[in-house]
Image 1 (tube, rainbow, N blue to C red):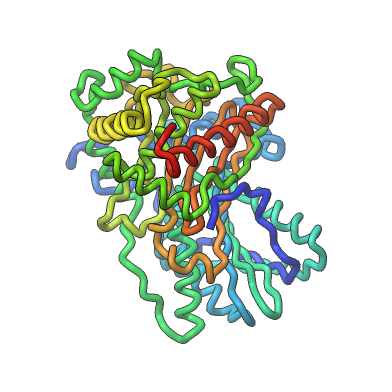
Image 2: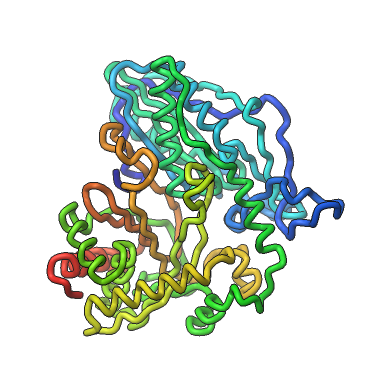
Length: 483
């Protein structure tokens, strides 16, 4: 299973059905951001759910002022960064079983039962109780042509909305011999791993309900509990705290919290525009295995080796001899949130030398040591770092093209063993950007790169050069032990 651009979500014609999440009772309104008061202070109890820092920051980039002043036109300014997922059901569809599976997933994960709105006190979330959630089926009728199926998929992918919801949409294209189940979540309520969990939960629950059984899935913790714990842990954080030493040093050396993407993207300072999204294979399965062996010899992981390779590839194309980038790091852990849906990510800075002639062992070791320092110095959430150390950058678009590197091993996510026979797929949708983002991911078939960059002629040339140089660098690392 690859992480693909949403433009590559292709549905075969069939009978199109959608299910919309509805609530039959009033939701519980929850106060927005800010320090969590101590018990007995007259404010909300510390255990009450709150929006996460990521949700607060992300929503702020899209939401109009709480009083409605300067409100933007919904139809012309509708915008969402989202993920989508698909899987196949072979044979005739058991529609009641699928409806039960979709409802089971939404009721199982509180993040999928949240609604969001701005208020004078900040972002407010409203969490529906599981028993109050229903699904409203909408029959779109037969779709008889590939062009019609493509148009239906495009409408579906645009259906989520960060500002006003819905934050999850679900549907199916039903045929006599097979059914494609498809769903999309706004980034506000999910991350990449969470989408794999949603896919596995729905597919596993369908198989159980279709066989007359109850689904057997691991316990999934409440994402809003995770958010509350994160806020309580950092409620008294100060700019001079020792836990921010790593960030303070990085900001001083970098000149700010956002490391610049070092290559030309053909945009003016402060500019941006529509995004281009592509996926390329960098190494096949044998190449990825050879890379892993080389990285182990150097005392590092494939993720660290890939990070080093990106720094070297950028330097070969004119980038600096010190690689600085922001890295999303999972915060869900292996405990009660290992199978939860939500946005379990912190953004951390890493920097290390990629000097010409340093060789594979030294460069990978430098990336490994820098990654260790990053993790040890990165317990404070990125949004809190901005508030304390760079408040001028809080709740606004990133100021320039940012160097961003992500790595995931899709072989380790829930349901990975079934991806092939379920014909599973995940897709990213980022309508606009001012930079270039690199999502490397490993599957059973190899190592791949999903890239999102501003869609200018220069950015296309830069992106193509980077993909080619990175692939050759990884090949040299894997098969020749060089850089």
